[in-house]
Length: 288
Image (tube, rainbow, N blue to C red; front, side, top):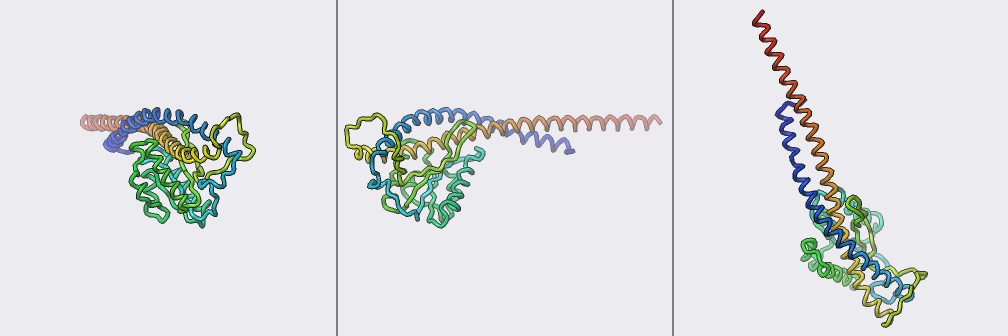
């Protein structure tokens, strides 16, 4: 059994639960705002996707530059993580999925990774897969000022690289927010645009402008919104994962502290008992 000093030191070290508890409360406050932003945006994104599906179901999008199907030789993977850790497997799940895509799905292809978030950048910045882009590197810390205008600039650059044929395919890997305790790793194709199925119902819509003009105008906006939604989902998922991780860490610290105090009291009682026995034994020896 450890001595009293060692146990006291361990009890003092468990005091970090005050930090984990504070981090949990901070993430809970940020999660509320991030969750509201995602839930408010989803109806708009869903309606825009519905309109595009209705339009594209009756049109041939093969002539649209963003829907051009090429032989896939060059792939860009947009990996979205957080800038900080202490959020469970949130970042590792994205890094593992990106690694699996490089090793399995796109084996033999020229794959580049656009890192949105410091955690994934730390993994890939010294590898041949890391995608260097001066315009995007200037907006590295996108979470510092998370606005649609900034994300739209990132989407514009990605779309421009696709039109220049720097890449034949672009996919996004991110955590989709479900609730504070659950996040799902999603892999979405960003470019080229996947046409809607021909059997999709067109619905009851009346369009004043020619349908192709509407599609050509809405497609870039839809892609920017898709990337913004992915980053917003990831932002909310990060705080949900961190809140859950810090809650578990705080509970574990409290349980550990409780067990250490019990061990300390047992050791202290044993030490007192030994001292009493020594005093009694010494007194009896003197009386003898």
